[in-house]
Image 1 (cartoon, rainbow, N blue to C red):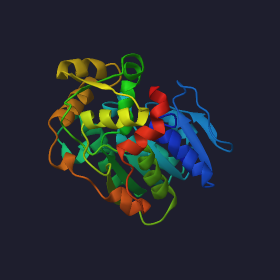
Image 2 (image 1 turned 180 degrees about the vertical axis):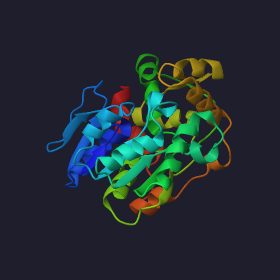
Image 3 (image 1 turned 120 degrees about the horizontal axis):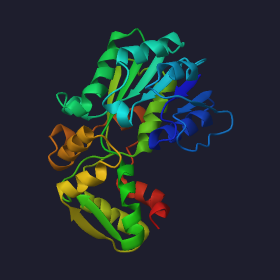
Image 4 (image 1 turned 60 degrees about the vertical axis):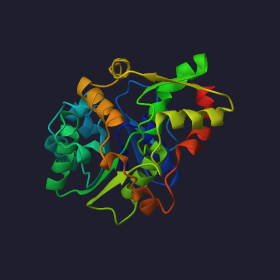
Length: 281
């Protein structure tokens, strides 16, 4: 049985559906602070990674785990060795961990210290593990929904700085492969989109998907930071802005790992914008 943490998120929700459609027995785990609808046959359990007792209970019967840390867990919480020991004691033998590209490109950063600590803790265990290191998500542009709907405007910083951002559905597809197929043990995959794209170019792609013009409004770093602090820790916001505005060469490099695992190219932003255009109308 496969347990999926973060089951209400952009990746976890799609992963649960993908695994269930493939015939896997799935436990969808969430903190219980959002409404969740799961496919037939999927069991929903409530747990918080900050509470190892609740995690142990939620993992009962699972031998495989998709592990995602988010929010406050990105900077604090139980020791990663304890989290993994709890999973192993519950019967888990395989873990696919959602890390971040920043764990490799900025290993000295406080924002990625805990993520990297989980990677290192996994390597010390006897568990079968796979690490996924995605770049930024296409779905980060869901932050544009309200201004696009109400003002036909896209507000974003660093309008002409590009990154190879990625479709969360592609991340979920790679995770599903690593969870259910052989050949991924001990592997670390860097997951990016098929090309570098700037916020201004994303605006153009979204405009084309909607069939109407959109205005790009470039935010200052300070303005963007204020918005980010509404939903992420300060250190994560600051380092995210550094990546967005001053990416390293490695952070702008397109990876072929999605194509290698899935046997198809990574999804481009224009395709994603067409698929999700209704959300912006």
